[in-house]
Length: 480
Ligand code: ATP
Ligand code: MG
Ligand code: MG
Ligand code: MG
Image 1 (cartoon, rainbow, N blue to C red):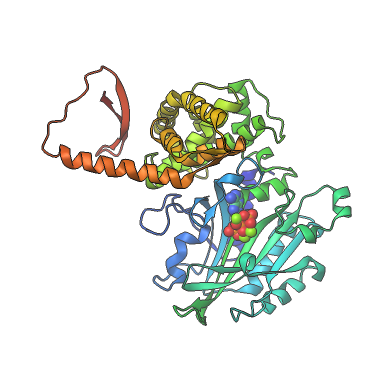
Image 2 (image 1 turned 120 degrees about the horizontal axis):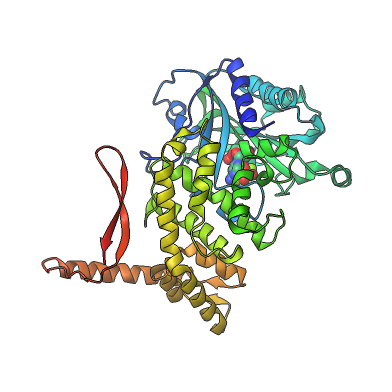
């Protein structure tokens, strides 16, 4: 079964249970100061849970483009190292806004996984909230009893507040959740160690695929919980993980969701992906992952820049460039060549990428080109500093110089330092950054009434983008 068929079956299944299929919200969040990017399917429905808006449909389902690289959910460090955390991923979800509750949600998730997708029952585990005496939270007996109707009791595990109680924030809707985990280990391994001991243990082949949240309380300002008048269901299942399970692969990157970009990268670099843990293969995975995050965020209107959400994209892009530069020995722009592959692959689900593919390609190319101008010297500078260091630390001043002169985001400096057994003095970096900001503020104040003298060197530098009235975006250059 292809990923497209698997996605479609999810929609068809929930449509048959009376759900309205709705589009994904943009991955870039424009009107919520607490969130830069969509990081879960429920984000776009927040106002329904808070009671600020009335939904047109009480049952909906969709696939949501998510990004988890900042804030509470930051999976960036895992990406490419493990085979199931991505920066950008699709979260399949079904919702009940004050309609059905635990009984139906549990029965349907089980029916979909075991009868439609035909995952063997002896590979599945589910978790239920065990309760928390300190917080006055009861064990989720209801969910436990509904699970007991479909799955053997030794496959129902109790989980703590961290994994099995979901809260929107310090106040507001919250409730217990039940997660579904799949044991994908080979048979002889499974007979040696019980899968139940590996759930939530970061085992590469025992992975969580689906979270079912049951919103039933409202957390008050004083910390107390009152029952919600209308109870809601909010679920999220990672499509890439589901596809990996159904296609019988040991890694998300071996599914048809990623193989197109991996194969194109092989062709472009002359290197071969061998699914190992060595740096070359990590680079293949990082590239296949990061290009998706880059493409979908740009297509949704977030351009790379020096601050806020734009800097998150720039950081991801520079991280990918460094991986191919250092581990695939590619010294010229590569990522932009992958844009058409994704545009075509997702044309029927997220057509916005195909519609803007030339623009996205150009932006990615410019970004890569810019960073490649300074990357090599930055790496050399870092090697020089590490070579001469007396302690295993990169000082804050150097980290800032790498950022300011060579365009190294701090997390990239951290990554390269860590690969060499070094730490980075982040406090020193922040201090150097503050000093520079103070200096430039003072300089701006001084310059207020002065003429600005332009350097007349006939070269040009990429300075940004402009949105024309016709809604086309153009790249702007300035002479330097
Ligand atoms: P994990 O424990 O594996 O980090 P999670 O508990 O943080 O996952 P949830 O917030 O419960 O994840 O999200 C619902 C589902 O979305 C997960 O069960 C998983 O299938 C998927 N998912 C979460 N994070 C990622 C990610 N970074 N990449 C791919 N899929 C993800
Ligand atoms: Mg997580
Ligand atoms: Mg989890
Ligand atoms: Mg979870």
